[in-house]
Length: 485
Image 1 (tube, rainbow, N blue to C red):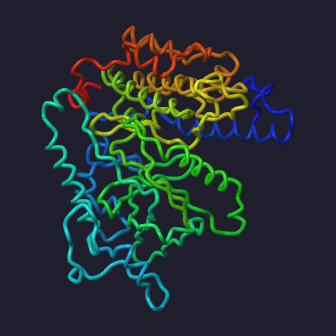
Image 2: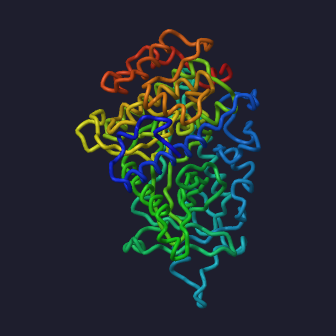
Image 3: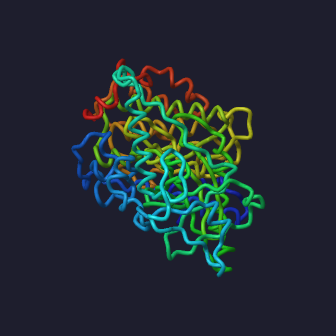
């Protein structure tokens, strides 16, 4: 690939040939990622007539070919539990982790993980006891959520406010123990945690694939100890000696650990919470707050463009998340519709922090020199192709997401990745805003501000929160408005 023929960034690459080669490899990797993210063809799209809040599971309209990106509700999981936990006997009671670790079998083989149903009585309550099956745990979870919803005052819902949610149980300082289906080898701890045997075990099971990205796959998971759904982001480790020295795998693991260290203490309604980490001989696992529904990108592909009331609501929430992140000196660096999750109640959460970075400067908006080329090309700000940038790149990317929500097309939809790189890196252009889309003057002004070329003149997230477009319409109700997308 000849980068200099597409974008004039060769003058910013290191003079050393070996470093230059590595930087070019990064550009090629960025292009590869961008092609995956831009695989959206309006001509081939089939619109789903169902409501936005009802496009978040197979039962509610997700197309079969996109079933891997569904994030089902508790009702969906309970009604079709065998589909979501296909490798488990969902009615077989599970022996708790304490017993299985304290009473190994005489032969040295792993302890049996199941016993006859009649031999183990079940108990009720939020905490799993010895002998509780996956079906029982999911039933408890569903019933608890129904009770919570009924307890919410009807006036609050009518006013359009989102349900307050109980924070997901954290696994930091605990020992996650995956319950493996019979016949499969249980993973051994990697030995990196010397105090693992002193930590309280937490049983969990892995379910169906619900997402995949540049680094690893995301699965539905169930915390059996607290009767809660969660997501687990997982890298499968290569097993041979040569594989273990593989540089790509080392980069992936480092990315996971960096991501965990940056995000484990973050706590905000519009940020996906990171709730735990575990490493064994077979996998690296990051446990995440589970968000039922899907990404904004998923919903766009299913429903088409959004009407302005929904765009305003989502934009404000993303801005609130960015304001919090930037206040913690964190640059996301990959804001796009596929990285914004939205649940059935219209609550948006920023996700996928695999290439995020904590700034060493006092403020996230202070320019950082010698920053690497990171992100997805079509959503990148022009300054990413220079020697330095700041959290203002997230503001530019937010503008791209707003444009996506109005048009159901990625930015630079008519250009290839290389052509877009030229527009951004050499010509310093913003993605065009089509004249035929129906948006208000406030929306167009908001986009113009996000796409200011000079990053020092581009507004911060806090400033944009005061923009008229970032205000929800009075009495906006997502459940009422989602059928007007």
